[in-house]
Image 1 (spheres, one colour):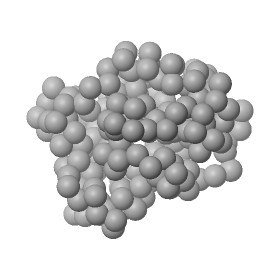
Image 2 (cartoon, rainbow, N blue to C red):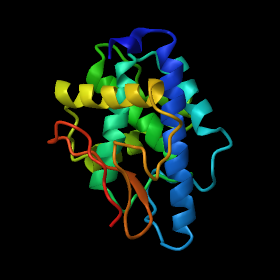
Image 3 (cartoon, rainbow, N blue to C red):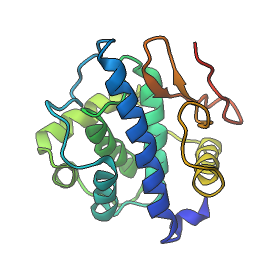
Length: 204
């Protein structure tokens, strides 16, 4: 997705990812009223005042990481949700998951990147908390950080279709990144990286 380098593309990507995460978080907030969800180090006591889109725009503005890092961060969030189904994305953890996933992606993808203290300042948390979040995120991923070219381009192709070709996101039907509803009504991102293409996950 060479278009990532275009100044006009990243704002659209930020907007789309924000919309996706906002919808997932709000759906899980509702389901959490009926199905208790596990509390983790990513959970805040209250919902942050800053919106998901504003937060992601702040990360993009100050992190100075390569555009590819945001796609890889999306891959990491997808993997994390698959490996940790008891920790669905919601309004109390989405911001910390975002800053952590982007930081880990930058460390893996870029030759030069800011340290944890800098990302903590960007994310509005302490350095100690940033360190804890990074460790917990890595263990949650099972240290599965490598993203093959095939996987990367699959995600890019999906994002490109969503941003430029398809109507606004409808989580119930349109996401070929398999935003699926499971019995507990918790939405999660599910992508089988062994598959050559995305497949729709039917409601169980």
